[in-house]
Every structure is written in structure tokens, then in C-alpha cells.
Amino acid sequence: MSTSTAETLAPLRDVHASSRLGPYLTDLYGRRSYVWHVAVNELRHRQITSVLGNLWHLLNPALTIGVYYLIFGPLLGIDRGVDNFLLFLTIGLFIFQFTQKATIDGAKSIVTNLGIIRAVRFPRSLLPTTSTVTEFLASAPNFVVLYFVAIVAGVPVSIRWLAMVPVVAIQLVFTLGAAMVAARMAHHFIDTIQILPFVFRLVLYSSGVIFSVDAYVESDSWVQWLFTLNPMYCYITLARWSVLGGDFPADLLLSGSVWAVAMLVAGFLWFRAAEERYARD
Image (tube, rainbow, N blue to C red; front, side, top):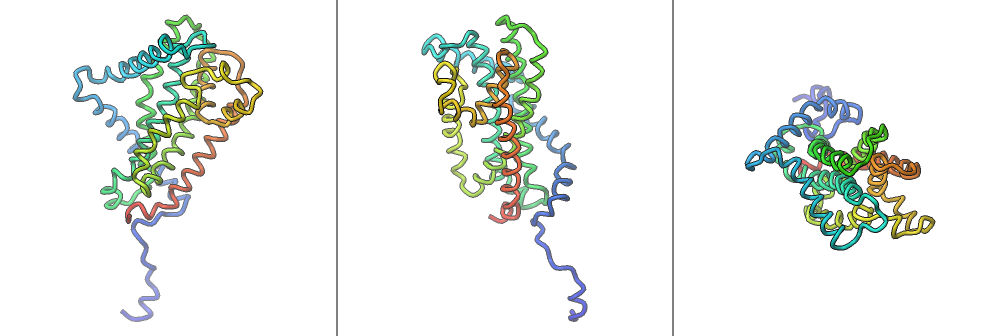
């Protein structure tokens, strides 16, 4: 090859190299039908081998609530300061479990798909996004159980219940960012997948999931301030307000929204910074 010919050729580019941000986001958005297709098919096949099939999507959350209520209600008496503890617990657990499951599944999304990552070029963030959407759809039956418990408990139906939609939307944004962070961490350190359940166990007991923070913590104390900075506590408390009522927690809405935007932006940028490495390591 002559020198003049070589100079006219475009430089070689790694097939796994990430494109610029604009085209990258366009490519990611263009694959939204793939995300939906994979998520729906995953849900269809989760209970395909069980006798009760998809009925488990309702039975599972109902039985989970029953077990937690029995242990932390009548047996341990954690229901101090809560009038409707069953509904209070139901909301807390369902909101918490969505983020927990989506983040852990997000951590697995890269390490369990190395074959397709090395064979096909596509935005790698598609994988934690798909796992998050899958868990989001899987959590839908939880809200059927939640509102059934609310009606049985005698909570009057209110227009305020619709506030659950933006609350969960904010939580979804936060969770997507957390899933991307977990995905890159697990790629660098595979034991992250084993550690995350213990991290979320700590989050469970530090976010007011199973107890009323107001019943144990003084409202003007620094401990209460720390809870305000806890994103899971923000989403759980906002969800409880939408169903149970009470004073609107504007400070928690602000805190939860800031957390959501910050986590998604930081998580996406940090995940994408290693885009080229996922196919090589």
C-alpha cells in the first residue's frame, strides 16, 4: 500500500468502542422495543414451571407481607405508634423490594451476558436498563395487593392515591442509576453480587421499612435529619403519604428528587466510562 493511499484511509476504530453521547443515547432509545420485549418475556417465563403459574405474581407479595406482619407485628410488637401497621408495612416492603431486586439484578446484567457483549455491538447500558424495567413490571402486582389491603383496612379511596405514580417514577429513576452503578461494580469485582444482599439488609433496617421512624426518633434530632438524606426513606415515606395521608413531606420530595437525578446522571456516566472494557475483561 502506498503512503498516499494509507493517508487517505480512516483510522481503525475498535468495534466495541463507545460512540459519542448523542448518538449513544439515540441508539439506546431506538432499542426501547427490545427492552420491553425482553422484560415481558422474562416475566412470562418466571413461573412457567410452577403449578399455580402467574398467580404467584400475586401470591408472592401477599405471603411476604403475611410473614413480615406476623413476625414484626404480633410477635415483636414493632407496630408501636402505627395505627394501620399492616398497610404501613405493605407499602414499605413493596417500595423497598423494587429497588433491592432491580439493583441486584442490575449487578448481574453485565457479568451474565459477556457472550453477547463480546459478539454484538450495542449500548451496554441497555442491559441494566432492561433488568430494571423487568423488575418494575414485576412489581406491578404488588400494587394490586397494596390497594386491596388499603380498601380492606378501611382506608377511604382518595385522589391522593394517584400521587403514587410520580413517587414511583422518581424511585424508578433512582433505581436505574443504582443498577448501573452496581453493574459496573460487579464487572470489576464479581463478589459485589454476594455483598449487595447484606447492604440492602442494612438499608431495610435504616429506612423505616418495618417501623415508624417518628415513634423512635425525635423530630428535631440529627438522626431524623439523617433519615431525610436517605433516598429509600424518602420514597417509602412519600408512598405512605399518598395512601395513608398526613402532612405532605415536601422536604423528602426534594431530597428524593435530587437523589434520583444525581444517581441516574452519575451512574450512567460512570457506567459508560467503562463501556469499552466490558467486552475485553
